[in-house]
Length: 103
Image (cartoon, rainbow, N blue to C red; front, top):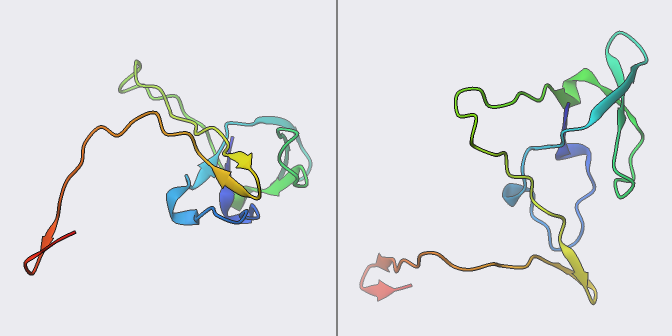
């Protein structure tokens, strides 16, 4: 199951628009009620383990392109008092012209 990240508390320096909408996949431990499931979460995720179905989405392997891997972003590193990602490289750079100004 994939879990909606809107219930996660955003750490300082993280912007929701750059994050995936769902995290996971996580294993279902048990079905507690008709619409409530208990998931096996990572120890770093400080959340209650039971979730309503509106926050869950089934995880499906990509059958159309079986060789394509789903990218799961690694968590950022805590450096000093802020979070950082390690950049492997910049593949392409593009200059935009706006009304005679290069930006």
